[in-house]
Length: 148
Image 1: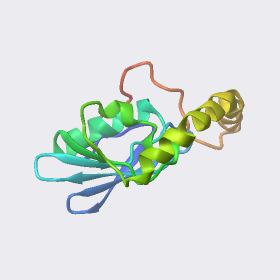
Image 2: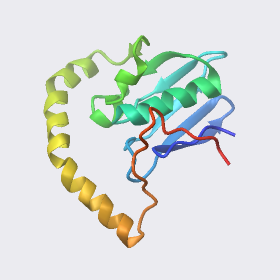
Image 3: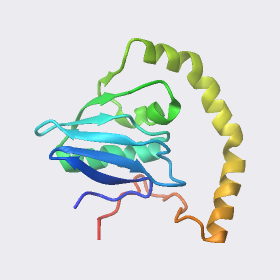
């Protein structure tokens, strides 16, 4: 059974391919993917946050082996924000994607920092009303836990 994270769930979509489906209220925000390259893995998009991306990297390594490549599909921060969790791994993208990240990324990250407190209040309200299964972030480096 694949590893479990509070940021996403893994769904096997083909023999050696998994979709990492973002959990509501987690640090993933967008979906990602893992492909088994035969002893190595390829990760398609790295989520919004480094914590979610660290879980994704651990899951990819457990499912398919060390991460050999990361692919950034486009320049929205919820697809590349976790790149730092893949230090030392080559990143493939269109020629325009890194240019757009450089142009728009810092401003988008500042917007997210400013919106953070309101978003946390919204999630707290949902939790209090029982409308989501969102949990507080783990204090451990990775929030992966064995599947039950």
